[in-house]
Length: 185
Image (cartoon, rainbow, N blue to C red; front, top):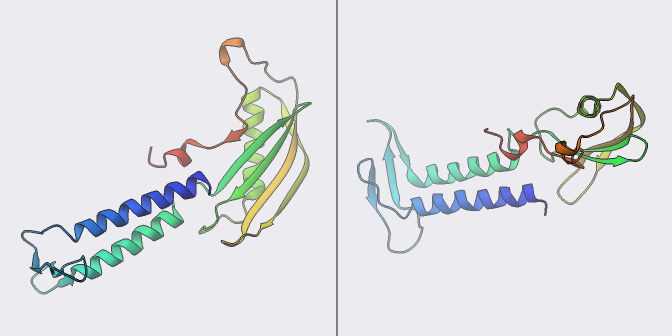
């Protein structure tokens, strides 16, 4: 499994554990009922929202777990595209794009993301421009469903900046935006 999926499963397990343990603790003022000695972990009690509205605690826990699972799977703050790049000789760069498996829009933006990354490489490397030598789009199928993919090769044109010894290594072979690592930063 990829690291991103593994992190999501760990988060989901943590949320479910907290929700399950919340049913084991006692509530003081707004929950009425008794905790059963056997049977469900979630007490047969209600949360009094107002004088006329009471919601069963079991319903709140289950709907909270469903919402948490949906949020972790869909992850609305994650970027739609994952970009991997490999530097080739003669200022050639191979870009491979993979769209997240479950999404709500952005299915037609592969070419835009491809060109945006190529422009970033031009600017980062101090080149004058780029040429697209090859470009393909398609669908990759797996057990979990299909996923949009795109790949291509660009040639960076112009002189390009030579990295100074103090600048360190050239751009990484795999590019992950900071918003993907910590979406709420």
